[in-house]
Amino acid sequence: MKQLFQDIDKFLLSDNEKEVARYIRSKQEEIFDFTCELIRTPSINPPGDEREVSEVLKYRLINLGIEDVRIVGLDPTRPNVIAEVIGKQTGRCIMFSGHIDTKPPGDLSQWKTNPLDAVVQDDQLIGLGCGDMKAAIAGMVYAVAALRTLDSFPGAIALALTADEENGSVYGSKWLAEEGYIKADVCVIGEPGGILREWEAIHLVSRGAALFKVVVYGTQMHSSISDQLPAINATLKMAELALKMQKELKGYLTFNEHPLCRFGPTVNVGVTAQSGVTYGVFPGRAEFACDVRTVPGMAEEQIKCDILRFLDDAKKSDPELRAELEWYLMVGATEIDAEDPVVDCLQSVTAQIIGQVPKLDAFPGATDAAYIQTVAGVPCIASFGPGYLPRAHSPNESMHVNGAAESAMIYALSALRYLEKTK
Image 1 (tube, rainbow, N blue to C red):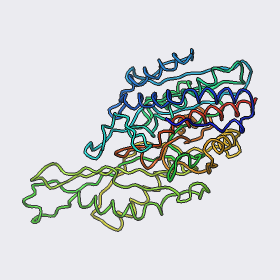
Image 2 (image 1 turned 120 degrees about the vertical axis):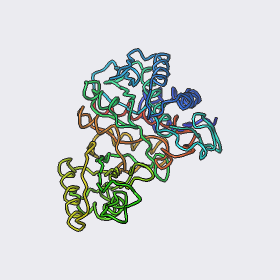
Image 3 (image 1 turned 180 degrees about the vertical axis):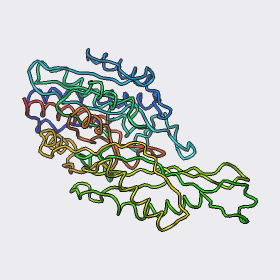
């Protein structure tokens, strides 16, 4: 493997930074190998079981000399990993967080490799969860280990490696925040930061998500006489309503324009759909699920009112339509101040390591910031990590082989600068 970071010493500001850089350079191959180990350790959600990967993380942290490591969780099969290294000087605490679960691989016939193999092809690491987000987690682990080697530094650096992010965070960041495990002055979440290139943007905003179903009712009866008696096909009514909702619902939503959320909320209609019973039964019930990706300032009760207003208008235009809203949950959008010291630290370090200044942007999806910031009160960088967001949740998920080592260097130096700057 090509040795990285050979010319960064001229950018380093202190002996501590030079020591951290030396440590990460010496561990480059080890960091890559650890990323591969994490990829090969299944943590697919659903169904959800992070026990094996949490043990891999726990023992690696302990072997790297980090003594304060805890496995905690609402359910024994859904553990989270918490760790902290405290410096000898007083100061703030910076936390790094990432989820240890992955989405399912989906259709295996579309994968060129086994999803749970970590395969390198043309400088690309291929494997389930490589960018989303096991490379970032490996980088975080070694960033914490790098600061542990220092004789003295201000404040503390912490880890919150969470379960269940891919299926609602109930067992992960939500529970950790509610139970008081999230304690820091700022948190950096290592979700993939690239759309067109890796390390493209620091995401100050995490868009939220409003999740709901619409149930449509028709006339259930024997299908052989559906053309002889008055009958409403729930499946067809659902299809008509879903098409109308996709075209019109955004116009009903109440939101303010946001400079980082240029396109406003995103409406996704029919993310799942179910209808009918079987052959011979004219469908009397159908339902479709939707998600609305929200921007900062959008409130749950107002979104419900907006959707109900849309449904009322749809019923007025079609007297045969019978439809009801079934609310699932709302995950709020979050935002960190662009003037927070952590933003400048991440930008300046990344420019020195990668050679390009990451822009400030909004993460298009929701992240664990929804609970770390709104429940625990810790301001969050919603996403800044290696990898490409469009490749996440896709067959042949891939990223550059250097991503994990780059994240270790960027996280470690950024953490050190933040702690020095704010002491």
